[in-house]
Each structure stands twice: as structure tokens, then as C-alpha cells.
Length: 381
Image 1 (tube, helix red, strand yellow):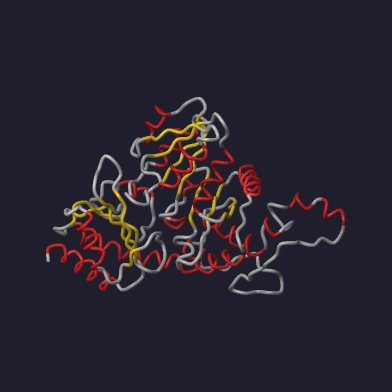
Image 2 (cartoon, rainbow, N blue to C red):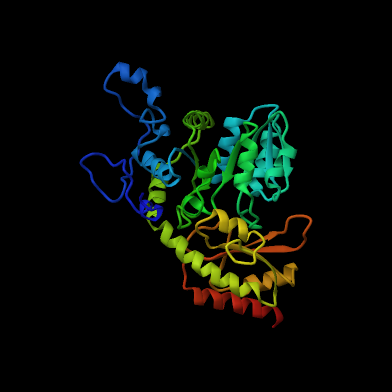
């Protein structure tokens, strides 16, 4: 079996005959033409597997979708305009008025917001469950529970979940499980292999890798579920431009290399922060000593460059001084690109103060370490 690190580099297979290339072409189209009336009248029959209208996809679109499915270990992938759109798509396809959905307390903020603002308005009930509950999640099941959202690690607090235990408990009651797997990508954790029904990625992050595209993906091994996703996506008016698909395809061949570099650098920075006198708590599951390291070591194959920590001087003035002293880590939202970033967020209740989230890019690790060390030294200057 070909290793996934080799698979990610190989060119997409859906390149038109007679145009063998290592790079997928960009095919733009709104109107697709047909040779006869019969094929025109039956165009919707191939809407999810072929070409019927530009919104349904072009060769560039299908090349990316099929490549992502290959990396997920098989199945089908629907592409949408953003990571949040992928979450909305799964909710829209599965949930109706009177249905119940479960969200972990460490869930990505916009996932919670869209559930309690939009879907609750439309009659969907939701409950927040403790992140660490594992198989005990059955205590939160209702007769109308249809979906469980998971995210591991969480994108700010880096808390992890026992995904196999949650999947087993859910499937025993015919409840679907969706996972935001943006942190690990399919190279670090194949969510579908452990039974997750819908694996979500914000391709904006590591797959794109260069902070220049917005896109999301939903992968599944359920063919009927895939067609339902595509039908729902059309009703929502979701469309992904071929230019964005090309950028994601361009990012894939270097995905493993970037992750390896960022993971190695992040480990060194995490080791430095773990014992620094100015650091209160560090959150990075790949690091031995992290409270979730046992889950990461059991289930995951690779780490990445995203971590978070708190300062002992956990007040806004100290945070501002620390961030202002950084020269390489740029203040900005999002993560997953080649550049190092820092973001600031309030800690979740019941904690107080501020959380600093570092995204380690591909710059030389010695320069990054020096940058962080000097900024920490400024706190007592």
C-alpha cells in the first residue's frame, strides 16, 4: 500500500486525456453544453459525478474532491466556500425542526454560534456536553438526538476528545458523528477510519497552506450521505471557484513537508515554553506531559504547528507588551499557512484572563525561539 506521504504528492488523476501534467488545469464554466436533447434533459442525473452546470463542478473541482477523498482513505468529498460552510452544510443536511444536536464545550466558536443562532431559530435543539466525557456521552442522548459534533484538538484550548469511544456510543443508537479535523488533516488522523461519519476540514488552513484561499470540505464514506450533502449544497447556493480549487491542489504536494517542519519546530518551542518562568499553562498535545498526550499518542500520526499558552502575568497590559515585542510572529487570525502567527483570545469560563495562540510557520526555528524568548523577557524589563 502506498504511504499517504507519497499519495499526497502525486498528481490528481482527473486530468483530461492527452494533457498529461503534474499540475491540474483550471477549468472555468457556468454553462455546460450538451450534444442532444436527451442528454440535456437527463443532465441532473450526473450532477454529482459529472458536469451539468458550473455550480456542480468542473474538472478542477472534481480533481480536488477526489484527491481529498483518496487522502481520507476512500469515500466522497463535497467542497464548500469555507470551513464554517462545511459545518452549516452537515447541520442543514441532517437536522430539522425538533431534532437534537450535541456540541462539546471546547467547540469552535462559530459552530456554537451558528447552531444557537440560526438552527435554534429553525427549531433545532442543542446541548453542550463536557469535552472529556468519552463513552459517558450516552447520558446526554435523547430520543431525538441525530448528530454529535466533535473537535480534537480544539483550535484554541487544544483539548482532545476520545473520538473512537464517542463514535461507538453514538452508532449504538444510530446517531451520526461529525468531526472538525482541520488541526490534524487526514495525514495526522483519518477520522473516517475510526467510524466518524463526516470529516470536516477548513482547507483554508493547512491544505491551502499559504493564507490565500477560503474553502471547506466534508468527506464521508456514505454514498447516499454524499449525494444528500451535494443536494443540500445546491439548495444553499454553495459554489467553489476553480481558481480556489487549483490553489488547494497546489498546496497538497507540500502538505506533508510543511507539517513535518512545523511540527518539529513547534515541539522545540513547546519544550521551551513548558519550563519558562513567565508561562503559566501550555497546551500542546504532542508534547509529553500535556494532559491529552495519551490520546494524541494513541490516535494520531503527526502533530502540527498550533499551540496555546497562558502567561502568569495574565492581564491585558502584559499581553499587549508581549505581542508588541514579537518581530516574526505576526498578530492575525487563522492559522495553517507558512507564516508564523499569534492570536489573542479570552479564556473559556470558568477560567479568566487571556489565551495566547501560536501558529508556528516554516521560518527557521532558532529565529522563532529567539523571537519568543525576547518577547517573554520584555515582561519584566
